[in-house]
Length: 203
Image (cartoon, rainbow, N blue to C red; front, side, top):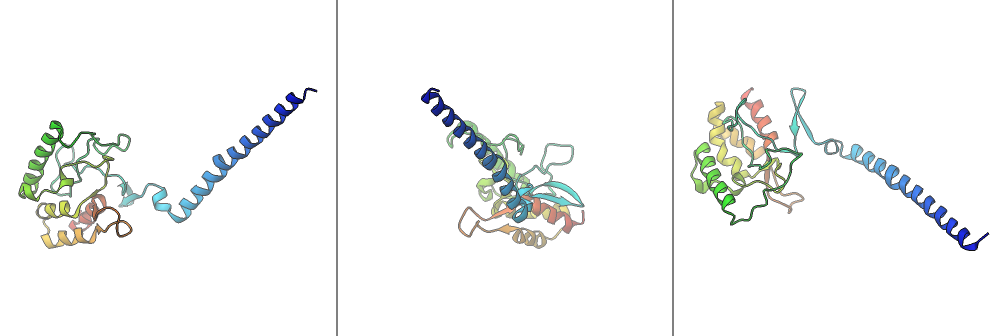
């Protein structure tokens, strides 16, 4: 038998065995191990951080959503509003608008949105924070800044027949600090805040 053919056959058989072993380890054992750890230690996050109200799933704490008037396109004054989203908070269409800071389209959009937010909340344009007029890099950010939540307090309180101090207390209770104490900025989850508001207003 030709030595070269024998050597080639051995190499191919060794390669095939390695392929089978790696397929089992990386394609079966590792995914099962990671899934097991995730389900055991981080069950809620591993399953999408779904939020329930009255026994029904109403959204994910990780994905923002609109809070418009039912059957309409306009924002509902009874609820805290999220930051703008160029995808309409569609989790299948994430990503920013990719417009530069000096792009006329972005400048016009920010200017118009700032006026609308100020008018909707009854505050001066100078009080409108940046996240109220700009979308996030993912377009599905579920959080807003405490500053944006604060300028909405008076409007939300009036629309729900509540005292401003009650609504302000909700915002303070739902304000989360920087991740690990130094990453990111303080933020408020809009879905969780609105669910707490719903309970307070008895809706």
